[in-house]
Each structure stands twice: as C-alpha cells, then as structure tokens.
Length: 104
Image (tube, rainbow, N blue to C red; front, side):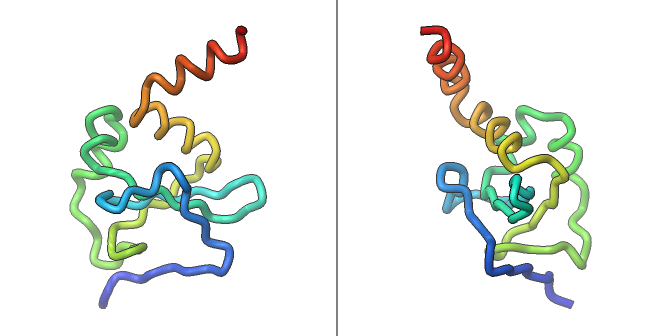
C-alpha cells in the first residue's frame, strides 16, 4: 500500500521554513486549528535534538503518512512554537536579534 497523502483546503506551508531540498515534513496546528507544514532537513533536526534523532533513525512504517513525497511527522506542538524552535536551529542569531529588539 502506498503512503497516504493528506491534503486539506486550508493547508499552509510555512513561508520561511519550507525548503525545497528538505528531507522530512513536520506538521502542527496553528491557533485557528489549521495545519502548517515545515519541510526541513533530518540532519539538522537530528544534530540538535536527541528526540528527533531517535525518532528519525527508527525504521519508517509501511503506512507512514507523506506530504510532497516525504515522510510526514505529526506533532502536537503549536505551529508558532514549532516555527520558533526550527528558526532557532536554522538561524541562531535570529533569537539574539529578537531578544535585543525588545530591549531597545
């Protein structure tokens, strides 16, 4: 059985964290209960998170959901929180800038 592809009319790809060369798609719901998709790199996740490292090194089940032909990982986190976490992994300086922006 081929992997299932989920599609809803209110799907939204994150503008900043949807990379064409990404190797996994993470999905979380936003405040309006809409799905937000993040196409990121397994290597970046695994390098920075033991949880993701363990999750992504496990064998892929035959019935794994997919999105854009890639494994789809459903997360129960808020999409905005996930975006902030991923932004920190891809651009650590963005956290410093955001902190100082509020100070001055």
